[in-house]
Image (cartoon, rainbow, N blue to C red; front, side, top):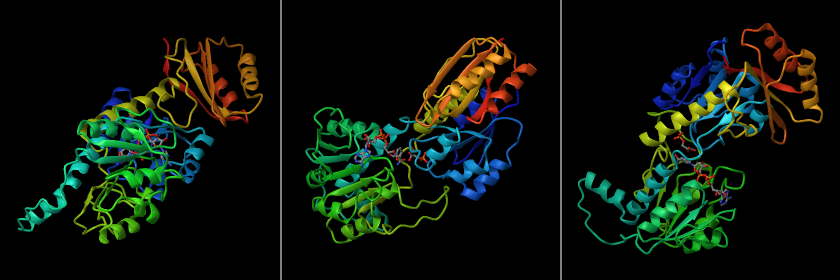
Length: 414
Ligand SMILES: NC(=O)C1=CN([C@@H]2O[C@H](COP(=O)(O)OP(=O)(O)OC[C@H]3O[C@@H](n4cnc5c(N)ncnc54)[C@H](O)[C@@H]3O)[C@@H](O)[C@H]2O)C=CC1
Ligand SMILES: O=C(O)C(=O)COP(=O)(O)O
């Protein structure tokens, strides 16, 4: 069976390369993100002799056009948490499996934010910049301990809840707001709504995903509802905050500071030029989307997503997936496994089973899982990879009008 090829963008950690190499996947690395046309070109230029997978981080957009232009793309690995850069509906409709790493970089984000809370409370960056300019600005004015202050966390998920625990260990009071009912950790308390949280907090930190409801969630009115002198931290997604409204509030002195890691528009690769209306404001800590950028997080993500993608290629397992129904039938027990993704419509299974029945091949294992629009079926048959009958069976199943993708899993049982 031909080796799969993985196009890996955005400096995905070498642990992914190592994991892929160990599992016989050929890696084709590209340093930065690619625009849509470049991405299509790069994918189309990949060797044609094996399954094709794509690895990205938060910067590469994968719209529906990419899936349409590269129908042989089997799976996409988001080597990060966010999957908002991928058209998940288009991926699912085309039977493309998408995987991510849902928590491997969360501690890194929580630690960065906690550090920023203290740095903002002590005006550290402004004082440091003054020292660099040769100015000895020794003063306690406007500097505070964080002990006893209130941290408001918007989005009490993996990152928000870890931040909650870390902040309480410093003696902070924690309030949070989430659209779901969440278990409060330690002494943290939920707020009745976002406006209450904004009005109660000395620091507001955003940890929501990019959705139609969170885009623009912090605008002029929300910033006005924050306490005078409070600070805003955004390490979630750039679209969550109206950056011009934030700048106005900082310049007017309504807000005391901000720490911003993510921006409505971000450069595509390290070393590119960066611009923002927030540049030049001493009270603002600007970082280049490095919330999850630690050696520990990246090494762990590299391994995790490479393993998920490899398992999918090897035996059709979808653990860690976001577009496929969850299915893990374990290793192939006998001969070969046929992996079929199909439209989830009435009668589809009986048609596939008719093909299998007509072939007179014994079925040694069968697993099915479905999500709304698609189904994933794994069928084990006692035929070797090179057996022509296996290829005939795959062709027959693939040619059913309900089949989206049909392939033989890489793994085989001796
Ligand atoms: N700066 C960076 O490098 C990184 C940024 N991120 C961003 O942080 C986000 C959050 O990450 P996690 O905590 O792991 O995600 P998560 O999914 O564990 O938590 C997100 C929480 O936000 C809540 N939520 C969703 N919509 C909301 C709304 N409209 N109002 C209030 N709460 C809402 C959800 O119910 C959930 O509890 C990611 O989606 C990603 O965009 C993640 C990692 C690194
Ligand atoms: O995990 C995420 O969602 C992030 O925002 C981190 O993205 P990155 O891996 O730094 O491109």
